[in-house]
Length: 528
Image (tube, rainbow, N blue to C red; front, top):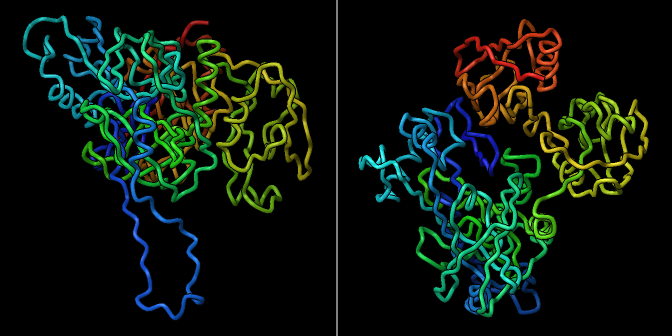
């Protein structure tokens, strides 16, 4: 099973386990983003109709004869985003020695994706100079290209965070060819969104946000962007699926679309047939770097909230509950007396958290939050994140077979912690080790190609400044033991690391399984 992974500014660098068997990569926009070729829908008519009165009424609306009117309406608001980056000497040294280098930090050294991206950048940027370019001059410049769209005639432009991340200079090219310098108002790595601002006397055209919640599977979608740096390009397709989780963060809720987008489309909008933005194109699943019909867009309802906060505060302020959660499986539901598998099971309650102060317990099943149902694990992190700090909300829990309502005063999310980290379906962050971890659920095993006989905790990401980076531990590795204790959940890893620190140890020993081979790794523990 091919792993679909988007870093979105996180420390995830893609799985190692099974990489040699992988034939597809999820490509990101500045350099590598796209979406599949648009679907052409035809509806067969019966060869002979019995009578006009007997002809069934179609529930499928007629396919639009043309999108020309919509395109004329929205394309003036879609822009090209160009960036330049002057990597530091240390970054260039890393690249020359076989490391990930600029724009490739999400992949572990030596992985097939690492080499693929290096080849791609060399091909796309023949003017790059320095050790890899063979020119001997270390003053390299890296160029990037993406897309964006104007949401306010005052000059506010939405794009992807990964389009502008680390850029030294950003310019925006309007639909009429005008090139204008842009500055970053703010970014949000967790959702891969960024807000830019340009200053111009020109009259700008803006587009409106649509309602992504109203977008149904099968609805038409039109993508506009800057594929391969060619300039404005329009493609059409349908919404293929909703609620896709790519394990890139706690807020994954992508629309899957098949309107073709390719490299350079990152940050561009996807429109509904009324010309409103329902998604921001962010990633594709592709075996070749081109469109194969599977693309992912950030839903507009999520983006609208994030961008509004960036515009007002320069950053995103999220609520914090302070629990680690996991999906309720059918077996768990039966054991807990639930009629169906739903809710979020509390696997751990963090110290000094709002959840702990309010009385939430390990083993509680959260079924409702602030009047909204929590049907699946991914519902809770988004609901908590959208809650203003200081607000008291009712949380419905199932405890010992009885439903209780607990009032929790939500706090502001600390910078080093994740909201409601999903222990099974999403990575939990261990700040001591600098790792993102996940339990080995059947779904995770399939996606990372981990054999059934391997037990432990999967590494899904690594923090660049964390202690694990120097040891070679990376995504796809399985932590079998911490010290002398076997581990099966991220909380068990954290518990053993905490015990090592309390014993005044400067390092902790990990037993790592990598593609069937086991080895010990000693990780230095940060000083308190």
